[in-house]
Amino acid sequence: MKSLGIVRRIDPVGRIVLPKELRRMFDLEDNEDAVEIFVDSDKIILKKYEPSCIFCDTADDVIEFSGKKICRECLAKINSKAE
Image (tube, rainbow, N blue to C red; front, side):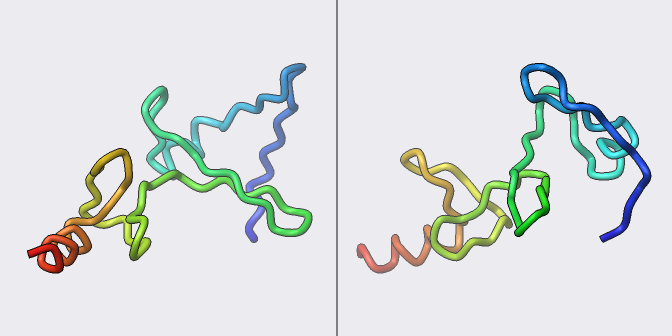
């Protein structure tokens, strides 16, 4: 894992600010994009959130169907089984 040498303090309510350079690097738009938080032993990992299909886990061509994320390919498979 590469260190960028950027250190940020946690504020009294537990927030940290992602530096502008990182937001640009990962194409994170203020007030639009979300990040996922993962824990891997002693590491906290932030990842740009990309909704993925509940069936195949792909993030390509995902739509919302009945409150769930599903790719068009899986939706087509479901439709063909229902016919």
